[in-house]
Image (cartoon, rainbow, N blue to C red; front, side, top):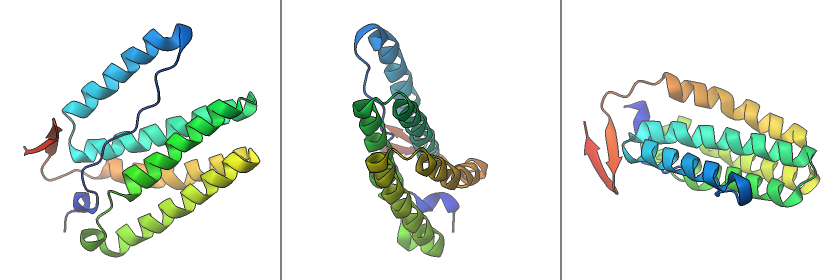
Amino acid sequence: MQSTQMYAPASPFSRPIPAGAKALSGMYRQVGLETSVTGASSHHLVSLLFDGFLDALTEARGAMQAKELGQKSQALTRAIRIIDEGLKASLNVDAGGELAMNLRDLYTYISLRLTQANLRNDITALDECAQLIQPVKEAWAAIQPAHAEVVRGGMEVKA
């Protein structure tokens, strides 16, 4: 069984384009993300989800410290969506077996902790979630897929 079959093709969730002076910078970042997604393998897309998740946690931490409640909620909502709609939803429990089920349970726990962090402004919960996801991210990065499935315009191309 290949390890990469545990995840179905996923798409990363990008942050919203910021308003005001940062709009142009945000547009360049969005174009860069879309360019990296267009020719990415499903393995690379999952890596992008991990990166996006950690970016959202960093943004939420900064917003909590600055007492920017709207920005905090937006960042945590993005992090939860990455976990639930990206990483967790793309698990293939039939092919991944016990490992996929354990990841599903981990992702469920992380979503719960992020919800609690949002309600309580709990930076410690954010740190816990980052520490929980980091080994999974590193293990995923260490996997070398036997073949790459490139996602282009909604079509998968095996290379």
